[in-house]
Amino acid sequence: MKGKMMAHSKDAHTHIDLPSLPQGVSPVLQQERNLPWHIFFGGLLAITLVVFTLWSEDYVGAGHRAILITTIIFAFFMAFNIGGNDVANSFGTSVGAGTLSLKQALVIAAIFEVSGAVFAGGEVTDTVRSGIVDLGAISGLDPLEFAYIMMASLLGAAIWLLLATRMGWPVSTTHSIVGGIVGAALTVGFITGKGGWSMVQWGQVGQIAISWVLSPVLGGVVSYLLFRGIKSSILSYNEAAEVQLEAVRAQKKELKARHRELFDSLSEKEQKEYTNALTRDLAAMREEDWEVDDLESDYFKELHQIQVEKALIEPRRAIETWIPLLAAGGSLIISGMMLFKGLKNLHLGVTNVGNLLIMGMIAAVVYMSVYIFSRTMKKKNLERSTFLLFSWMQVFTASAFAFSHGSNDIANALGPFVAVLDVLRSGSIVEESTVPMAVMVAMGIGLIVGLWFIGRYVIRTVGSGLTEMHPASGFSAELSAAAVVMGASLLGLPVSSTHILIGAVLGIGMVNHNTNWGLMKPIGMAWVITLPVSATIAAVAVSIMRVVF
Image (cartoon, rainbow, N blue to C red; front, top):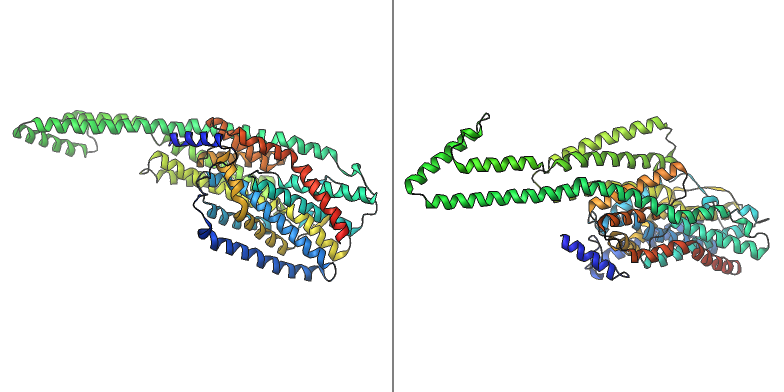
């Protein structure tokens, strides 16, 4: 297996443009096998688009039908590409580690992403994300001009996300939509002569630039420290224990062969006496208070000594001691992220002390569950036991990430779209918009469809292109990213969850000494050009819209 990993790492460095597919994305998944899935998701998107358009026309009322339909297409296009890039980035480590297949990841994403959007997505969303553009600086901004800005920002962000996804580059959807708003707003401001460079909060742009470095560094440092600890205390310990157990098995095999040869060299009378001694030893060993001095045969005396040496190895100590503690610590971070970030929009009225108590109860239950589960796996070898335990833990971290993503980041598609709906419905501009349930469900479906059709390109990069993944390393990356996201949110640091997770994956590669830095170069460049590229596309788009509409 080690040789396979080394070969894979070497291949990843040699073929930078096309890293091999992770375990969950089989290259055999060809057209005829996936055709029913393509038809299903294509049909689902088409039906959702039609039904949602009918709902929107009823919701908005008569007038501006062309603008409404265009905005709906742009919003679905944006949601589709968020699914293909951001959601795929979140599940890349799970698929790459072989914990989940692409279809299993799709099911989990469908459940938790949509649930996060519907149940915890919030009743209102900011019209302009991150407060980076002061549209109030455009003197006498016409509501339809404002709608064009939001429409162009959706299109600019979505086109850039599609290009980046097709190249396998995980980029920030938040930075993309911010870039779109900046480009469209500045263009309208300059064309109308009602605004200029002062509209942009350049300090916020500076914070985005800081996040290009701060996010991956924080994710990488935490992931490096966590996985290095896991590797030394669990994985390396298990490897050493497996080597010692193999030596014990070899000793037993050699002992059996040696005494069989000795038995064959004895006379019939001596063989009978030897067999009787073995029988008496077996009977003695069934007694609870037997001692080694009670044994007559050399065979069972030597076998007993080998068993004593085996007991000293304690092969399952790491699995039964450290993994339950690690799972409990991980549950604290994941539940904290859910309570303080994922569920914040529900306004449950639970105090911080209450949240801490909930986190403590969850950690206690997780510890006991994983401990008991680890004890039931004694018949499985160490490698298989470790793989299964970390696989289960990684499923939970991926699910929590999906719920948190659905409850927060789906607003990247919702914000500008709902703002346009409000303009068409009321004819005025509002700073915060009510998010109808139908919008959250429709955009959630758009996310899942995007993950299916184009998500594999980013999953390929995150799951196997940057470094080799194992459930233990995938769990480390996801947990580290969750910890950094939660900590940065509490401290108000300018970070990107996408960049944090990529940094965490790089941290894993640094521990294993197989990071594909060649592939990271275009990804880093993509981060830098995300804002200007989406801004440029949006600027062109809003210029055309002002003429067409």
